[in-house]
Picture 1 (tube, rainbow, N blue to C red):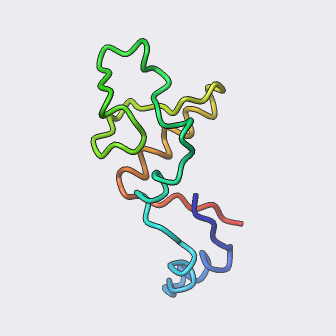
Picture 2 (cartoon, rainbow, N blue to C red):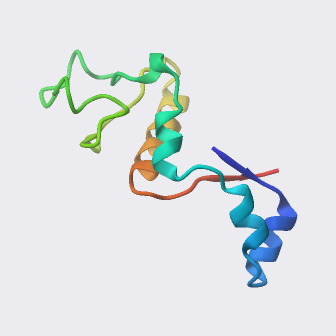
Length: 97
């Protein structure tokens, strides 16, 4: 996820976006590509009736809406799945530090 300082976000609210854009880093699609290989497959791949070996991988261009990374903790898995979908849609996820 992209990290930005509170000062950069404050400047963006005041119509000076340059500090924030300098901190954004790679585009959202690139963030998805940087995830670890052990999160590549879908958690539900063994039970899913819609499973497609080529599409149900985190790096796939045709990633389905139901994709969940292979993470054991359900709460973490749901948040990660939401992040992956937002990156796929081209939306930045910014953590303010």
